Image 1: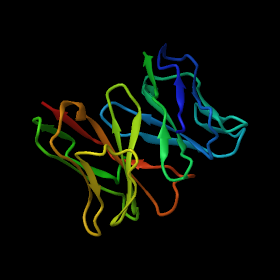
Image 2: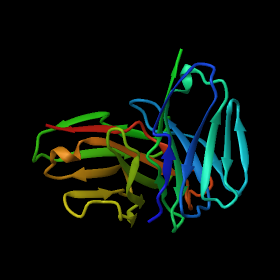
Image 3: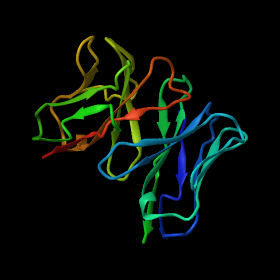
Image 4: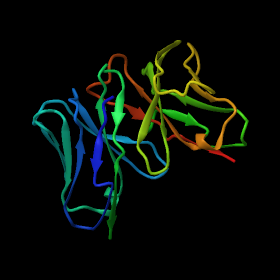
Length: 111
Length: 116
């Protein structure tokens, strides 16, 4: 069974600070995705990374896929209260059909 | 989350009753996935369906749970004889035909089931 771990589990920071959250596995994934979930809503896809070493930027968010395709990170610059939410990483399972989700990092950005 | 419609948004059932959760995928999507999320936890895969076919139900509990995606109409996740441990948020996601490796899912807003 492929498992994804995320750290930290909880993170509370002040507006304007930078932060990095991590997604790690002992398994290789063909791709990894990051989602953000707000309370009472479903997850919303932020990005997909496919190539080992790939870096993608989405405004203040920077996503990196590890060279060995076993891990990924999400860096947020100058966090804003609107960034508050549960950040989930997900990788395609061995059969290429379903996504395995990590437990998430719950981020709170205080004004 | 626009496009994947789940209803009801909230469902309260007494122990022993049946719960029926509905999911209409995005237009043009023929693949449906159901996930369960317990409070303060991530999403756990339950079942993957295409029209009239169950492709992977490896995450479904062996008893009381069933899912279908008929030729016409929404996908249904059915939980018989609910117990308190079934209380959770149930999310449906849909994708275009073919493996979702490179483009991910579109999720609905979920159904929050509370068993009292």
